[in-house]
Image (cartoon, rainbow, N blue to C red):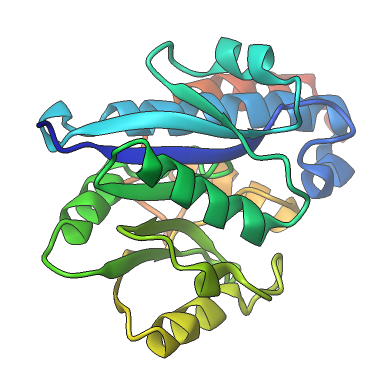
Length: 237
């Protein structure tokens, strides 16, 4: 039997007014939706760059209901789709972990759809760490105090219960819950999500080679092309 890791991108269909609302406040709803679509394509490419001999399958863990066709047009044909439309992110993450493991995968990585330059090597490393003996968690801390990746071999509901999602305490509290569960854990290098004006600037800095904090990321070809078009369309002051 081939050992296979499930890698699910947590995502919403990129629709103006309903997607990337904090970023939309900076660049507008249409631009934010276009950017979100490019981010998803690039994160999917990151997953596809994982060496096949590691064993992996990508999924779009998506919302809202009825958006499957939109996601199918954005993600590779090899990806599965898993609807998780609960308004509570903790429920989404827990249920996605459980359902993907029920499909027969030996481990699950859930990654956000907002890190287009995420290095593929981080995902490969996470899979290899999860496959060490014993139950464990792998966490990829984000620059805003959340996390861009959580990897598990078994569903642990406590990791996702009563977490103040969207705050700077998310990663810290998740690690505390792992300790409460006597669950071994390992940390990946820090990366960032593109959610607002500050992280949009981080993206610009990285893709123009000006970042001293985040280097060695993925090519993010779709995002690069979009950003070039966006910059050309913005009136110069």
